[in-house]
Length: 348
Image (cartoon, rainbow, N blue to C red; front, side, top):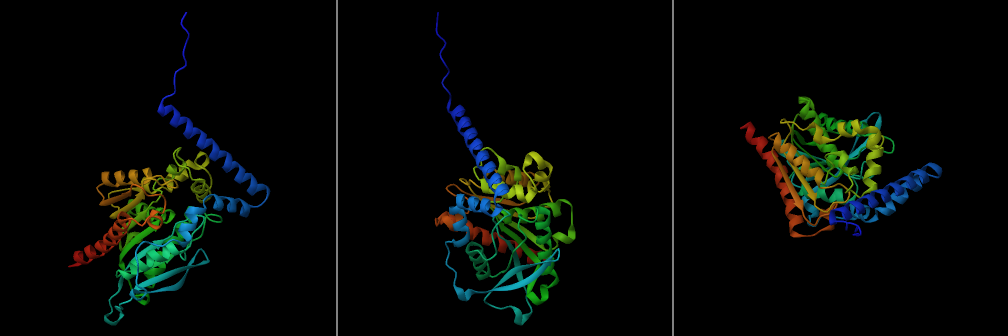
């Protein structure tokens, strides 16, 4: 009688087992963090999350772009206060050093939004400041905004801050010397999500007033589909906690809200030109999010570009100093300026 031999697990079986073990481990850690927060202090729970993501957060706080910017090539930051839901928030404006005020010409504007998983980040972080300085040195004005964070507010509130910041800029365009008929929205990570969500939803709904003057969107490593944060391949507890607080719960409880706040579900043929950048080794926001967004925009006939850094992790423009990284930064600047030039040609 022949003995039955056990079947050797295949490579795909082993990958699935490892993925399940990782998911189980992340769930255990998440439960521990929730219990610690509930029984002791949410501040302690947040401190543990920060400690677990120390490398990414350190680079976000203190890293700079791999491009030198002459301090004499820009002016700023100049801080302005705007109001959203009776809360005072700030934004910093940066300008090219060469003034256009003498001939009455206004600067085209980049509305820049920081990342931080909706629960952290600031316009004052070195990463964000270095982006603003670079853009201003290349001839455009930049408004870098702060917004309420998800410890006390959900995405709908944060989007209200975003809209109010843009309204403040429009209402004060003359005194701020900015051309609000030439605006590009730009954001990193969660800030890229906010920029895409604003443009996708308002263009889908054909909200002409909201989209007035917006010529394009730039999003670096943004979660275009919030459900991707919860995929088996994603290892970031930070992203899951951030999305849970921002949406008001995990997808198992708030799936409809996750879909409602995902830019990919609002894509239409009216969407403005879009520039996406992502690292292939991103373990915070899976690259599949930008890949799906790129394909969806292409299907709708929208002008879209996707640049992939094959060795890039989350926030790779700070971590990596490669020629390819520099090329993608320069291509971002070129895309932005191209949208402004095309607008002027359209008026001729």
